Length: 116
Image (cartoon, rainbow, N blue to C red; front, top):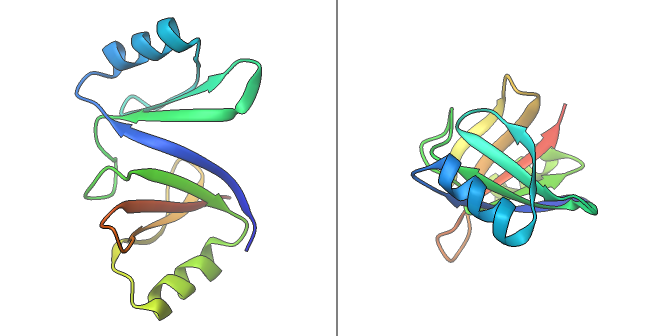
């Protein structure tokens, strides 16, 4: 299953402070802002991204990483078949993604998604 993109997700209490830090210190630019999640990208390489989150809008936890795949349904079925803990069921979100959260063997929560 091809992976299209991997983005680190960092939990923060203040999006404004975190956003200002990454913009000033590392030169990131905001490419998405939903109020609870802000995604920043390198202006010269937009595929280099980082997300900052105060919480997750529909899931119980902030994931450690988001991995965009070609076929999220196949990834979900594989995760279930492996016996992995599904933290957030496969869901079509109002912001245009289909996703689920799964816990990896080290305890990290992974957001696996596809854009609709």
